[in-house]
Image (cartoon, rainbow, N blue to C red; front, side):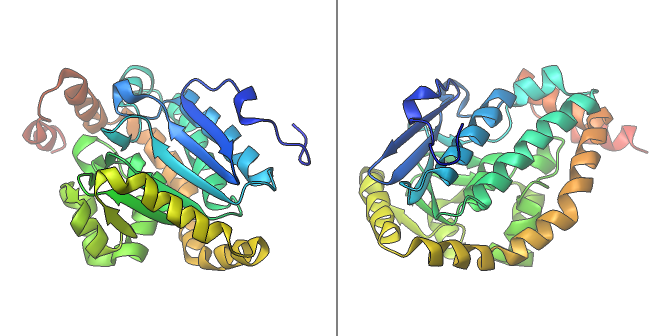
Length: 279
């Protein structure tokens, strides 16, 4: 691909995302509605290609990130894939985590304003994609939730770094430790989203925001975004390397095996068993 000649969106032949470019807007859609738009390794490869293309295309002023269907924006990592492919295999997980980190870095440093169009549940790594966008507009019936501490992981690819900056330290700890659902109204009060609208008005609200952002000077927006990213970039680069290694090694832990297996078997996690085994 030439830097000066980005490819047409339809030429990528993506399977796990949809990618559309029209009227100065790039729209990237998580396209796995059958698994609530959970992210597999191939999804991350496609996201990286789309984010790079949108960054290079000078005709694109704004990127919108959303999910297919109306049930989920993104529910984070595909736990079934994780359970089958990565538990007990740190090397394989390390490679997957590298793609995940790359996707967030490309999205955060895309050089253009980005909007998360939250059309359904926003869970785990899905909320990290939400926070890697500059702005977020949510339907009024969605929920946001982090689940790592209940499923054998740590939300160390954005949530542990960015939540304290967005909602404050105490609320960040509440979100990450308790793993409880945050309704759209509370998400707005806490600053996790910029606007909440009835579901039927979601597209109109996103259109209005896209138009406002497109009618700004691109170079000034790009540099303002770079300046605003300072604390996020600092916290990210100080933590993400060892987080990637720790999370990879943690795939050998019985906590991960139990958390993933419970999800696959659709049963509660046996937390007491984990406490007994760790004595």
